[in-house]
Structure formats: structure tokens, C-alpha cells
Amino acid sequence: MKIKEIILNTSNTVAFLPIRVGVGVVMTAHGAQKLFGWFGGYGLQGTGQFFAENLGLKPGVLMAAMAGGTEFIGGLLLIIGLLTRVSGVALAGTMAVAIVTAHSSAFFASNGGMEYPLTLLLASVTLAIGGGGAFSVDRKLAEAEE
Image 1 (cartoon, helix red, strand yellow):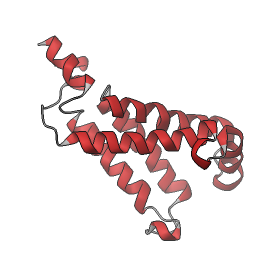
Image 2: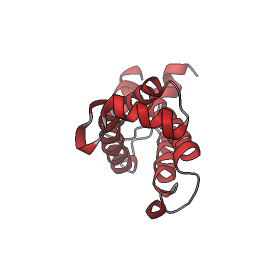
Image 3: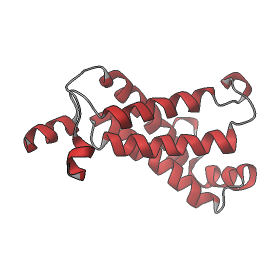
Image 4: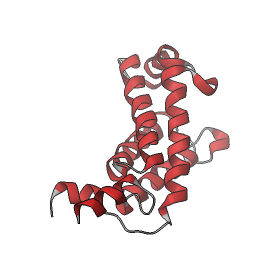
């Protein structure tokens, strides 16, 4: 099996559609907070300063750009269902770093814990395994290859 087939191959189920679009919207919004300061975020400089000073992720602006870029672009790709598996892996990795660096002291989100990023990580892993499903660009590209 070619790498292109592995990346694009997906079932025709609609089961992945709600999670793909929902996680895509959430991740795009979180990335926009980090990169552009939208939706009450701090933008790249503010997020970079927080990453460096509070999380030990240095250089902070670069780390914030990488996290925000992965969330923003990965989220947009999930929404349309393009490169769903690749985006799922990238977003799962970003959430793993968030859990380890910022949310490891507690479980529940109400205590600043890992509950929410863990849920996003697991949803991203699910999409990495299952692909985009029906109504995804991946599915259309896979059909065109057949």
C-alpha cells in the first residue's frame, strides 16, 4: 500500500463527521487565540512569553507559533477533512505537550487539569486511526484514486 493510500483511505461512515468538525472548530479557535489574539487570546507575543516564563518552553515565541500553527492549520484541515490522519497525529502531539507542560498537576479542568486536553488528544487519535470518513476531502481524493 502506498503512503498516499494510507493517508487518504477512510470509510464512508458519517460517524467521524461530528467529531472531526467539532474538534476542528475548537482547535482552530485555540490556534487563533495563540497566533492572532482572537477570541480573548494573548496573541503570539503574549503566548510566547507565557510559554517561556511559565512552562519553560523556549524560545517561547517559536514554541507558541508551532503550537498555535498546528492547532490553527490542523483544525482547519479537520473541518474540511483534508489530511485528517496527519492532522490528527499532529494535534494529538500538541495536546500531549500541553498535558505534560501545563496540565499535569490535576485531572479535572476545573482545577486546571488535563481533562479537556486529554479529551482533545483522544479525539485526535481517533481521527488519526479512522480518517476523515464521509463528507471529507480525503474520501473524495481516495475515490478519485480508485
